[in-house]
Length: 120
Image 1: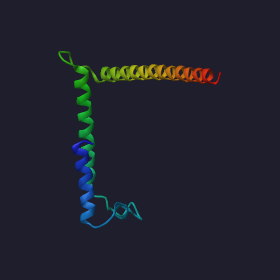
Image 2 (image 1 turned 90 degrees about the vertical axis):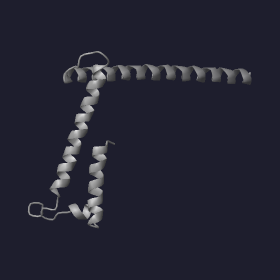
Image 3 (image 1 turned 90 degrees about the horizontal axis):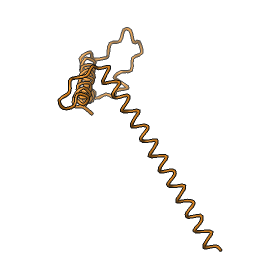
Image 4 (image 1 turned 30 degrees about the vertical axis):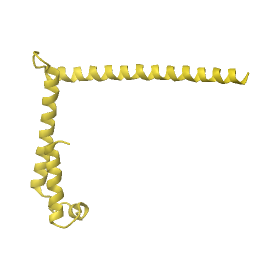
């Protein structure tokens, strides 16, 4: 969890604790239009925290895609690269799983043959 997100979480948590109420009691509204119990500052802080988190994630992806000595790629190019990497990782995973399954079947056959030899 990022520090900004955790900070927003802690702010809400301690604000509720200071008021000696639970989140359900605090946000329970019988008439949502007339009863304004939602603290705007907390909402703004949470929104800003989410924006900061998304910005940091995008910067990390761009830095990773840029690599050493390469030009910065566009967001679209980064997305396509991530998509292709994900697909490649998935294909590698499938190949490994098939190899493991093949190995298991071979081991099962060998154990069956060993059992048959012992019984004869």
